[in-house]
Image (cartoon, rainbow, N blue to C red; front, side, top):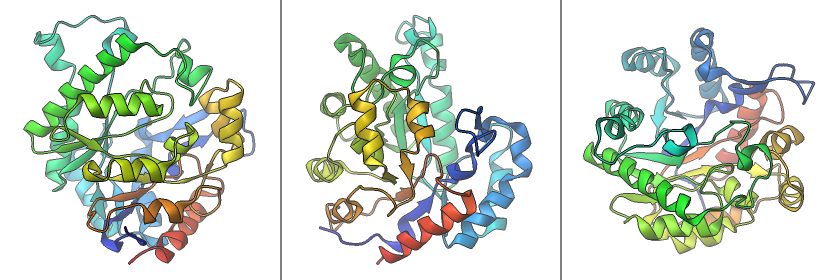
Length: 319
């Protein structure tokens, strides 16, 4: 088992600068997701420079919808960074009031966004990607709006349909030379241990590996080290963060919306929470060569300081 992370295989997700409150001093203020704001294009180079200045040499691939691959490459090169695997998600058609016939033109087009992610990955020489179901913020979505981390409104038939959609997405990615890893995410239709295990059992490793988020595993009450050891042979990449486990436990015991737990401070920089991150790293196979992406979904401090704290922890845990 491993006891340290490989320096050349660690990256930072820029999410500290992206997932913000409109008034950082007011947890009830509007949530901002700046990747969706065209104006963020002008701020992006500065964010990438902050990542490099903190000490990281790689960042998670995130090409804006408003830029070309060439433009993004120029920004990455100018910042002195390389890119680590990105994130693809796929929607369940019925959640959007759509019925698709397998093999129809509409079905084929449903995966166009996945093809774009494959194109981006190949452009930057990446061979893996995190693949997850959609995180929906629609008012009727029980797992984000009412009860997180407990498998609320579980439906076996719906899970089968989610698995079918993920399997098709993984096929699309494999056809372009990209190996997908299942990315568990609180608020999706795959957040509990049972849902993760059913998905991995249904889709072969040749199509879908495991790219866990250790924080989202723990938020759902799952032991991350145990999951890593159980699926060591199909482990692809990881998202790593820390958590306030008291808030995580409270959110499971009392029905809690996703954003309420986020606003309460569930997400923390590595080393500042109660996750046994040393134990999680020790569970990694010695021969594992995947990426570890440090991801603090909502920074607990100024984003630049958050990146520095994340790097200090990372540097202390590198080979």
